[in-house]
Length: 37
Image 1 (cartoon, rainbow, N blue to C red):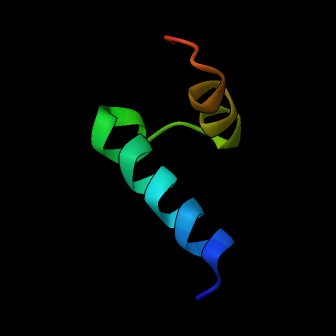
Image 2: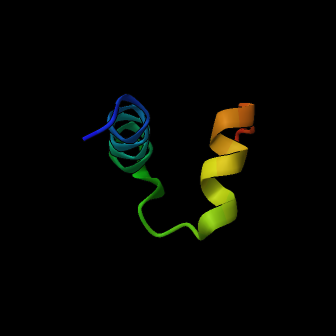
């Protein structure tokens, strides 16, 4: 696993843990931007 891949895995795990597992791809973008929706 590359450092970038490991970071992406951690971000998606956090995204999922905060209840966004059902979101589409744009959900992670909004999450990274800090959008509340």
